[in-house]
Length: 451
Image 1 (cartoon, rainbow, N blue to C red):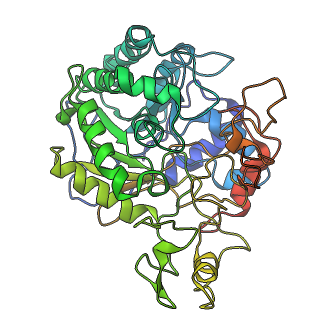
Image 2 (cartoon, one colour):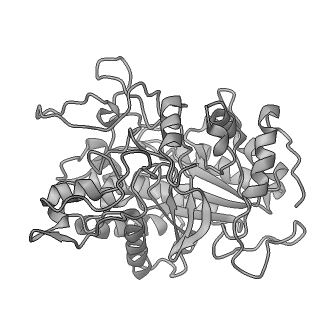
């Protein structure tokens, strides 16, 4: 293997990246190897197979600064573009061109990007809601999507496979946070009525779809948000609508990504969704709450099936974010829970240790999950780290701290009803996307498989 030229990479991380290159070649499951640089780019069924993935030097720098972080600092993570200024680079951070140039210097084959800047982004949460207001769809197109596509289209990057995760959390929000749902918000109702998310996602898909080396993946959330039967139909309809809006077609969607920036485990090993304890089915437990799915891979395969039936390509792939769903450490169960009663059995059996399945912010007890790999099991194109481990999900402050407040990031949140609610959030968290050392160290300590 030719060693990369570390152009534009901080000197103190070169040794880690050099070692990473030797271990980050995905297993090639077909006889054909990746194209030579002189060959014209061609699309592949699974972009992760045979690919050496780009390792973000900025994430490496943060990871190796933490005790034990060098054990995972060579892992590939997605680059998040969550505001317009991120395209050129701001606050001393690399811009999109710099990341792509660094990928070329590493002799990487594949770069992962997350686009996360829709108008009225994250309408189902109180904070933060991004830089664009609900009426800024034209600005989103002209100042966010168009410049990104222009950069990606440069000849220098034609041999890179660009995997793009398009606006996570957006379309699922329009299912669970609208209408007469308990968690409905005026912002989500407004976004749904205007079609803002559908048009924004559709435009992004259409523009990205014009580039033959770009592979767009739509977010299907996770089983603990939209796993119930009453959610899967509306989500399928919204995904289909977005994929056929603003010039997009379903052919512009290469696949789907599940569990983005979330904590749901791949497989619950010690209990099943159809278990019955003392005459009571598992789905009646407090934890499962009538959801037919208790883990992520079965849910992802199910949604993919519904989506292909709805008109998406039968070859569409599905990948799962495993950056923080390991749940190792001393509290990980080693077998089924006690058969005393339904809730004792489920709580004693489950690997996912969240107090409530819907908790998503800086979860205590979480650990790094499976390391990124192609074709890890039937029906799954890859395990990936979409969310860079160690980056905060949101500020853990109180309502009166003079900053944007998100209840599920507050360790001491008390619902209006007055009853206690365990958000599972760690204290001391910085704003969304900033480095959270305590959380990263916990993820290392609780990694599964162990480091």
